[in-house]
Length: 217
Image 1 (cartoon, rainbow, N blue to C red):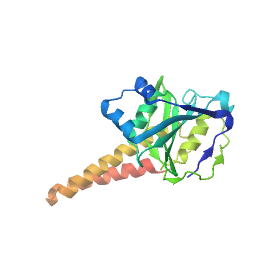
Image 2: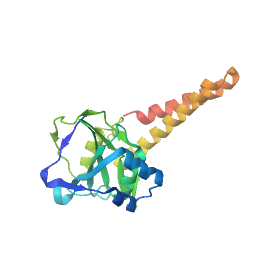
Image 3: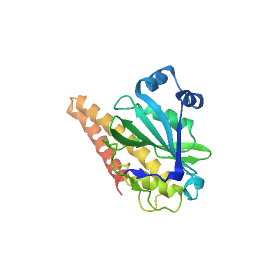
Image 4: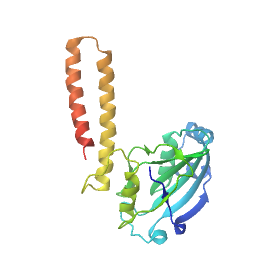
């Protein structure tokens, strides 16, 4: 897993009160309780933008934000990350810290038609918080930089000539096919009659073939 050292010019360092998140996202009472239970602090750590990084924006990725979250628990409910993504109209990379450990999270996202279009969340493994960082890679623009950062998280790499939007759509399709396969596997396990297992097996094989095609690079 790669941890990047963001240039000093990108440092933002602003603490974000949770109330500010509530103001800009649909937050239920249950989610507010989760924020209190799981998140100690939200810090807007870095702002990667044309004026801070000297890289051109694109319509899909005009800026990239880095949020550092101090956690009270080892895990975080993805609804909390979703709230922050809803509140901020740009792509976000989350650095989640719990005691002396750190992991990254992100829902690959672009702006499309004036709206934020997102995939499911991707997580790195936990690593020591003092893991050495490396300089940001060279990139032609912010969108390409974002693709490179996401590649360290995504289980399925972006295909050659595949746009960021197409990659996000494929990642979503992979998640849906995995859910569909798991549902069929449960049905197959519960079904005791052999003649009823046959069509379920046939459908499951087809879904697995479709999933393999989606995952192929």
